[in-house]
Picture (cartoon, helix red, strand yellow):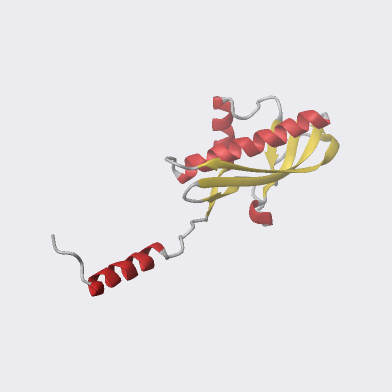
Length: 150
């Protein structure tokens, strides 16, 4: 086997430096997904509490007896070997459950007026939530008002 010439060695090193020196292209795709379908799936799998009701902004709710304040939840999940939708649903389940647990802690039985708040950009929808899907992580940020319903 013949050793590389200086010119070939230089070209190989230069090409390697160009390839390895390229900045990683981080993916952060913002998705709008069906909130009601995700809530139902989360209830069926036990990932979302069934005894604390969740109502997205714009949904009709039973009469509110008392509001305990607005709270935020920002959850991420490993997206490795998962579709964007699957990773987003896992993050959604965690974010909703966190708000539900806060409701129980505050003496409430519901979280109302839930909105997406990904990267502090409010997204209001009665039917959808937003999720940031990347190559390795999916994230959901929600905010909602803890309440005691009649």
